[in-house]
Image (cartoon, rainbow, N blue to C red):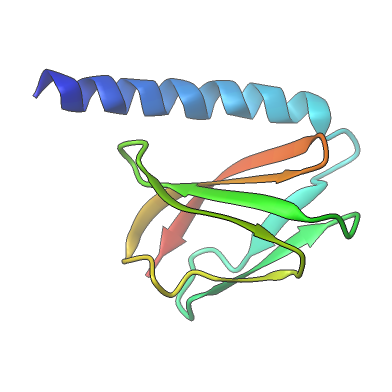
Amino acid sequence: MAKKYFYITFFLCLFTFSGFAQEGKQQGGDALGFYPNPVSNGKIYITSKSNLDKEVTIFDVLGKKVLQTTVSTKELNIASIPPGVYVIKITEGDATATRKLIVR
């Protein structure tokens, strides 16, 4: 049980500090993002100001890595992820965005 609380605490700290870090790197609006959220069709579309490859990592609420991939297009298929609440981290060059992702 203590291990579960450790992971939850770790996950919340990671999410909080990632939020502070991304604010400094994304001057002038959201350089990275995605839509739709919540996801119901199994696909998300990543928005960006450049066309570089993007590393996408999705974590569950316990901090377990559910998906990690690199995409060169704007579309990402997440149909294999079961419904729930996740955290998505998108990295492109030196810009990083961390957001909550809801899959229905």
